Image 1 (cartoon, rainbow, N blue to C red):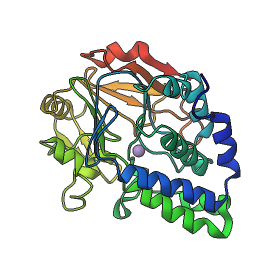
Image 2: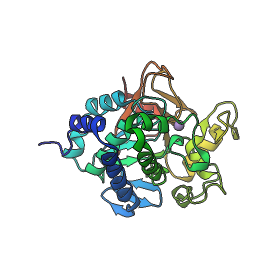
Image 3: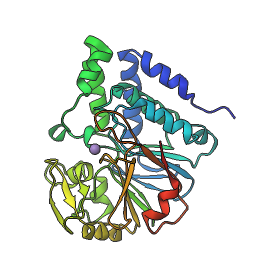
Image 4: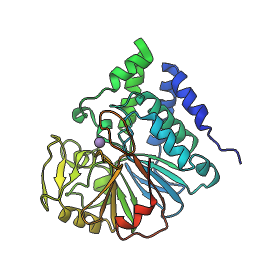
Length: 311
Ligand SMILES: [Mn+2]
């Protein structure tokens, strides 16, 4: 069966597309994602939260930060997008932080957005702190300069469009009885799914979105304390236990932190961090992604290790 999307064609386009073409693709993706609500395939969309049916194979990818080469490697070695074409239950979840740092931010965005347009019911794009709201943007934010060198005098149009995209990316993904996925960490104050789903609406009055995008786990304390990042919190194992229990899941999957081996495990196996890019400025030895059957029940991250692919 011919795949519905030809990856090498998309990547070629990513390097050749005009500013107008880029804006058109980004605009289409914004309209598509903004329109997502209720039941769509295996997604149950509530605000900016997706409850995902525990069926099919999931590719889960951590921070990419402009590393197009790693994105291509991940898609090829995992057998996506062929699997997306052949199995309507296959899903690819990206944990956020697509741009900044690496040199190919525009191309990474373009590739992901084309995949979303080709497989609307099978691609989930989450929000990272590098896709933050205007008053809480990661720094340094190289994207405007990268767009300037890519799109010349027209760059501002592409940048405005991509900023619009940031506001509709997903806050969290929940797979019942199994996983909660966020970019940074869980907001300790989140009591309900609505708190996760509408965290962006309550920003900046409440810190829910800030926590989701910015927080990191620590073993130094059990509750929370200020983060050295200047936004979000450091959270201890007690917080992780409470959140996992509250949302009836076993493992928190997140990105956000560079890992030497591409992944790390925290809080006695209850948190898996994925970092899926290589090169400057982090120079981690490996990147990693997760390829897992969502029907499989998991009590602990250590059971997931065999499904982690390092590159
Ligand atoms: Mn991040």
